[in-house]
Length: 578
Image (tube, rainbow, N blue to C red; front, side, top):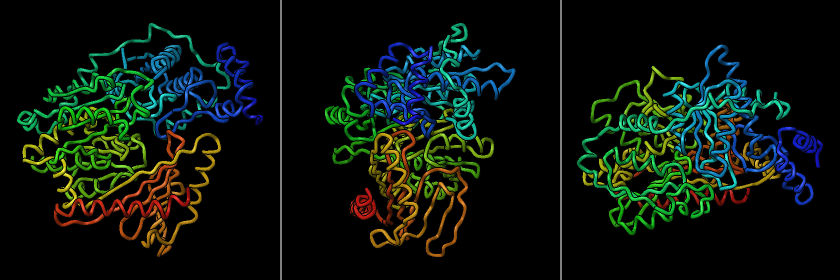
């Protein structure tokens, strides 16, 4: 066992704060599973694109009372440095995961012990409501306890700043530095000042519902086409109360819940993974939709910020949309109707990430709307909204991983407003005698037919992290001349912040924060992107291909051919490497 790990073990075993039960678990692992123990202590949990996230248990690389406590103490120290002699307020939200309520209480205890007034939701709420409440209550920071769609062994801790967005530079790095200054858990103030902890609930819900209704574009269309039958599952998470009520207030009364999955439960007993991106996560909702002949089927992840959606097509078949398709449909609906209502101007913007379909920019360009492109992670979208506040009005934005936002009253992805607006979009299509398939075909003819696929490869533990690092360097330093006979035109290295034309050897700078992402641009417009996940032990590959069609009848054949092209790219470039 490395000396660094031994020192961390001694740190835990000699701390007066670490409870005897946890010390006993460490001693047991020393006897039974040193590999597990090393994985639990070989590094400290760090803030990534999704904050602090990890498997629950003892160890510096685990989610537990002590890692949450030290993170919160570091946050408290930083807040007091940033806002000296000011009254500081914070808000805390949590999801249905195992220990989420407990970690929320630990966080509230530490903040209050540091003299910070804390608002805590009375029960689980979707993550976007944390962002909303933070802004409404004029807090300096917020914490949400969630691990999103990760397996049940995980939990997480995300910090939000006073604008309502997740931490970005320099605050994320500065808080990490404050955490690193804490040399002992004995330095964490765990003893709560209960007089500073206050409960919030329905009053915030009502304000949130009002804000949701403010972004509706065509309430009269909803009124005339509100008979949509919508099947919804919260996947045992936070959306079970809020999202159905939000749809009801939009005008949709026929919302059918998947009862078995409407019970909040951090064990997620009906799914292997509570992820609306995966068809397995949508299976029960699809079965109920078929049984009830529903028009739409929706699912949210446990913290209610990402939406999976499907629809019944003209043949009665259910089609599940990916995140890029959902984003394209919503962006088209919003901009087309802004155009029809004469609400377009030069001060409107959308935001997308570098791995989200370029069709969003094509749509925005057509309507004269500014597009900003950012790194993966919704915190960067929130940062653009803040940076250009007063200059550009944010209409919508999203990322391919099923995260989308409409309006700026929340500064994170929001499955609730996305669900409401998708229902409205469906009503709009129906009012013209169309359905979502027609809208997808219409978009393809106008703006190009894009098809994207994500391939994720899991590499667990310390050795896995090293393997992912080696793979990234291989893709960065050994660029193929061509892929499937198509020349690689450009290499975008977001770590070095360089955009290199491989034919002219000319290099331009990329004006974004540094991130370990490599992107190949091919001569035919195809795009291949590689990046390690910021929240899971995975390396992700994003493949995007495109074609032009002149009529809707060409859609299916061309879409299928693009699928074959993606598989050929995966087989030639990726499978061999993996």
